[in-house]
Amino acid sequence: MLSAQKMEKFAELAVTIGANMQKGQEVVIRCDVNCQDFAHIIAKKAYELGAKQVLMQWRDEQLSRMSMLYADTETLCDIPDYSIQQLQYFIDHKCCLISISAGDPNIYKGCDAEKLAKVNVASSKAMAEFRKATMSNYLRWTIVSVPTAGWAKQVFPDDPVEVAIDKMWDSIASIMRLNEADPVEAWRKHIATLHRRADFLNAHNFKYLHLTSANGTDLKVGLAKDHLWLAAEEEGQDGLKFTANMPTEEIFTAPHKDHVDGIVKNALPLVNNGNIIDNFSITFKDGKVTDFTAEKGYDALKGLLSTDEGVLHLGEIALLGKNSPIAQSGILFYNTLFDENASCHLAFGKAYPTTVRNGNDKTKEELAEMGVNDSLQHVDFMVGTKDINIKGVQYDGTETVLFEDGEWVI
Image (cartoon, rainbow, N blue to C red; front, side):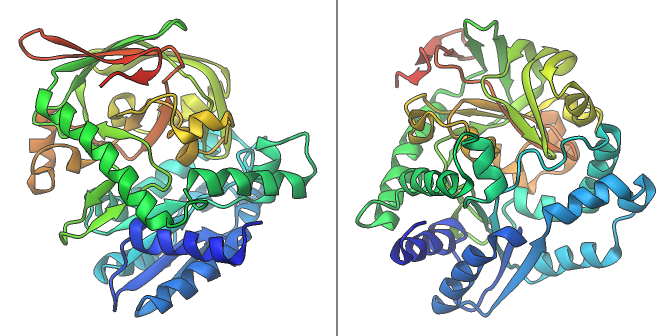
């Protein structure tokens, strides 16, 4: 376990650098019941820093598993009105959101993949307005993680659960810069470094990126018209900065939904809806998935890719080097928040409107014309092997090497 002092520092990071809560604002903490101890520390810190009210949106993954095993599909797809109304309250009151991501990667192991896919579609539709509010930065939000027994045992299967949890805490403390004398200041310096690279990419206005690696990845990713590379700290529609993912090492933007061609293979497993998908390849033509394979979790991948038309196109490309703290830890976390910050990644589905110039002022039709993808889903998958090479190609054909052997060269 972390010391009480470090736990408080962690909570302070989530409230200040993460969600950037303002005095008098309502705060929503979204987490599983397994994380209640840390949720209470965050709540206390938020109140100390001037929160008007702290609301808890509890989840229970064990109950969710039981429901998936025993309840019928029709019942699970009938999302109750009170759930939707709760999310609408968060939007109407402009709450800031702090999510604790710490699920068991195998929570839905053995469950019906087709049922899972249908329930996920129904849930995504019900949450459409809420997702719009977060992806457009109307609400400020952040995601952090703490160890749980199921997650820790997946990461360190050979250790007793108590030892596995302690190892997880040690890793998270290092990755979150909690061992620094002033973690808040350490984060500010880190954010500044990421923004310098984003500025370089924006200055070059690449037409597309070309990704290659020894595992067979050979993919050209066109970029949306007037795309913007973003990093770490973003700006909410209220003009206030916030950091959505903690940790974060990435610089990301919107691919052009119709200009992605080639094949890409995963570098790390994808955990989606409690299922592990691994050793998979995706083939694109004119921006659309035309073929896919998976040695593990094929049905889960098939279910994901059947959500809607938009999920067959890309909504994000993110770049980060193999020497990031998470990559250097050598730990496979089976958690997208961490693993996506160990590897360059892409995302199936919806693009963030903030990744194109004046995106929040555009209609769906205008965004589509710029190449910005829309979908009920946004699912990151890791493609950055340790030997990945990436070139940026400008509209006049000028090439700039961005990555060699998995690391930035700029």
